[in-house]
Length: 146
Image 1 (spheres, rainbow, N blue to C red):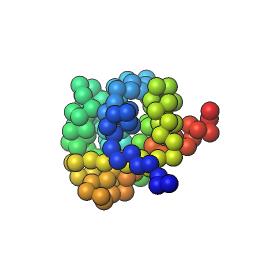
Image 2 (image 1 turned 30 degrees about the vertical axis):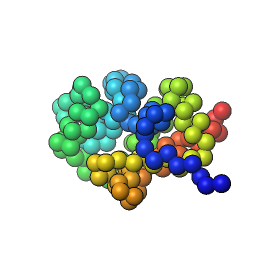
Image 3 (image 1 turned 60 degrees about the vertical axis):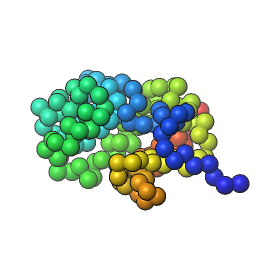
Image 4 (image 1 turned 45 degrees about the vertical axis):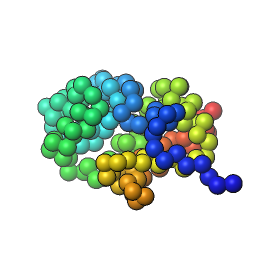
């Protein structure tokens, strides 16, 4: 039997998206989504820029703002560990999201996208799919914790 593939984050898988509402509190600061936390903490060390990104009204705006900040020197090194920690935090804090992730079984999770992201996802059949890999790793951890 072929493996189930989740090719993008459409219902019922929309909670896999970093844009999905999921308040995270990190070092006393509130982040409305994983996207807010990632764009703030993994992109810049400048406190003024961090607040500007963190306070973005939507995850889409946080992502846009994250492209305009002074990129931290170690961004390439920290981006995957930061993303992994924020995604794990989200699924640990939100049982309704955790249930959906675990229910995906052993499916291959792909962050299929139309905007050309081949680092975090898959675009036109190509990409490293790092977000999908992180989600599957988090799923495996959560299964062990049940």
